Amino acid sequence: MIVALNEEVALAVALPMIMVLTQTIHSMRRGYRTSATARCIMQIAKLVAVPEEPSDGDIRRLRLRFSSSTLIDAAAFVSEHIYGEALYRLSFIVEECEIDHHLLKSIRRATTRQRRVKLLAKLSQLASVSVAAEYSEGYLDEPEQDIRTYATASLIMAHPERAIRYIARLRHNISLHDAAMFAQLMRRAGAPIAYTPLLTSKSRNLQLIGLYLCEHFSIVDAEPLLQQLCESEDATIAQTALFALCTIQGDITTPQVKRAVERLLPHQRDALIRHMVYSCYSLRSCANLLGREERLRFAQRLNSYKCQIVCN
Amino acid sequence: MQLTSIILTSLLIVVLCCAILFAVEWHRAYNSLSVTPLLREGIGHIGVSVVVEYPSTTAPLFRLLEERYPRSEAIMVVDMQQHDSPFGTLIQQFRLVKVNHSHLKGVRALYRSRHRAYRRIVVIDLPATNRQYAAERGREVATYDYILYLQGESLIAHDAITYCANIIARHHDVPNLSLQSLVGATARLERASGAELGNRSNISSERVLAWGKRDLWPSLIAIFTPAIAVVASRLTGEKSLLAVAVAASLVLSVFLYVSTRVMTEKGLLVTLDTILRNFYRYLVRKVKNFNYLYKGSSWSVKSSAQRVPTMVLTKRDKTNLKQL
Image 1 (cartoon, rainbow over the protein chains, first blue to last red):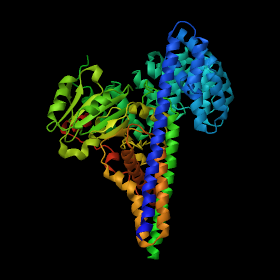
Image 2 (image 1 turned 90 degrees about the vertical axis):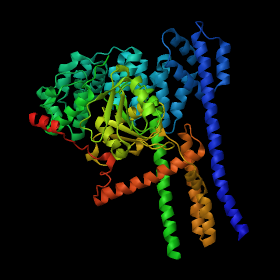
Image 3 (image 1 turned 60 degrees about the vertical axis):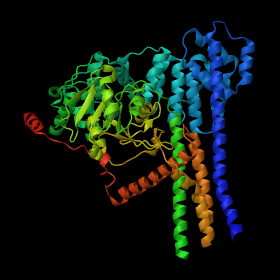
């Protein structure tokens, strides 16, 4: 009995020990990879900071010391933090170390969707220093939404002047997060951003990007277009337009706005009340839009929020 | 004896199946989040209010002020009479002033900052005896539509708010997000007014958010559970129980494998403890959802955190209402 029990107890104790060992090995491997990436970033940053082009010896040293995946991570990180001439030097390093070549090969070989999306995101980061981004056009018709989104992102970085065309080509409805990401990429790549063609476009995705820009930069001149978009059949567009209108402190007493508010669900109305208080609207201006209890809630919130405070 | 062993074995098999499902869902969640690029600029109107209930130090507040996401605020629910020293100095430091709080039941005072740089700080002075109303009062004061609840000394991870806002913007159609942590303490992220939509939590939007102090004994129990099961199986002479115990150990190793993928600053024992705790919560939520869907019960909606804010009418409010 005791001998048999010992075997099983040994088994039961051994399993947690195996788990501990697995976890330790995994953590150590991860730690090593993180430190290698940090060292690689340091090396690339040093080469990029020097005004001269990197020598063949430097390039060879980089290729020998670091794996291709580490080089991809490090180059993507550095490219996001540099401007001007430094980008040209980085593009030279990317070309000589064949980082983009490795990246494209990995994208082609990736078996899972997540892996491909991650690599495409890396490609979009490297797009400003590599010609390989053009190859992502082949992924614009993939069935997976994320793959299409990140392929579009890398194309925007490669050809900022064609950004609107690429976004309009997307077949799925993008989220507000994607719209923000595209808008930020367009700004970084120096693409011309005009809100009027975006807001008047028939494409829902372009309208969403236009709304994001109006809200983010508080474009007061966009008020008439925002009023029109409040009546959009797309609920997300109508709601975002309403919030953008409040952010720019536009006129919310118009019939379009009233109809848009009536279409909102109760929890969306409550969110709008919070947003209107935050945007410094008075109770009088919102009185026609809200119900009896909502008006009271608005007044209480307004009193507790702004009353007696003078910001400096 | 036969019946007991059958019941026990089937129960363990059900738990194991749930554990595998849980591990798979977490793995998917982690994978989907790992491809989300972190946008630190404000994403539209989306913002997150963080309600910290009765912290004993000012560390949570300073951690929240480090957040770079612009549309966020820190609401500290404190009892000034108990923690007078740390928060008394804060009021001077951040130039906090008392504002109108007549609609907040049981609240002694409500403070906001006069200084534009600190407009993200809100302090609610609520007696500790009214602890049960802390979440509700925090929600009534919150500026943004999504609220992250933290307990006591829990500190959020760096960029946690930014992650929250990014996830909300990505899954904006989901009515009520529930963000939980696998290796950290669970932090609820709820819509301020999503009560009528029910408890439709979305496990695919989970992310490491917060952690707090943890005791070690549950982890020790977790590790030695297979050992106890093996011994019990030997004593009772049930071989099936032994097989299930070994399988349980294997599932635990799968848990650990998943946990290493989201490992942050945590030791092994604490990780295991919180994983098991989250697994328990996962089971409870599944049972609640089952009950809600098939029996039409709405008891999950009636929890204190998801109740619709109650209106407290003072005399002045009633006269205002008549005028409106």
